[in-house]
Image (tube, rainbow, N blue to C red; front, side, top):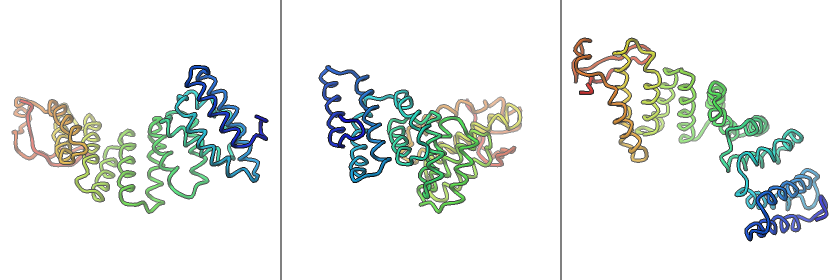
Length: 290
């Protein structure tokens, strides 16, 4: 190849040939990686310096990436693209390709992915990259930043109903991780108003109650929260998509119910209505573990 003056067909054929030789055991994975590094530089150059062949280079870049992806793990991809990102932050086409390959390889728990999405969500008029950014922030443990982005999306865009319900649930989960349990429950209720009987929403409701149980009074009062959580899991069980998870959750958290003796000393009888206070303020039925 004549470096940056190579034709797109020659670049593609060279990459394909190295992979063919690797499959025959003649070349190694490292050879594929180094070849892709050279090839991608040529592709990037010809896309950035627009010419009659730019469209073909854009088209073939996807094919080349598809060939390369199976050979690279997350560390390989991050190592390969970090310097390119630092040197070409204004190259939106490059950033989109970096985002695409990281996303497809599920390499989302890293700073490069967050940095790429932060730029893309600023230049893209749709909400696609904002949603990806919010989810990536959650995956990386930045729960406050994640919930702020989800909140912004819900305020600024008229989302299709299913997407709005999912975004509300993701927002609720971020709030749960911030220990803002009451606000988190409010978002799940909004999601259920859009999609009644949605098992995934009831599962999250139950998990929010469990996460916040220790903030509700004494030991006995904390165990009463599990009644409400199990109520949610019972509702979730009606949704076949999450039935197995719901049943497992019911079996797991029913074991945390108070026993008869504890209920007796707290003036509560099994089967009677019981109102849980603190941040919850919900009524359920008392039950015992024995």
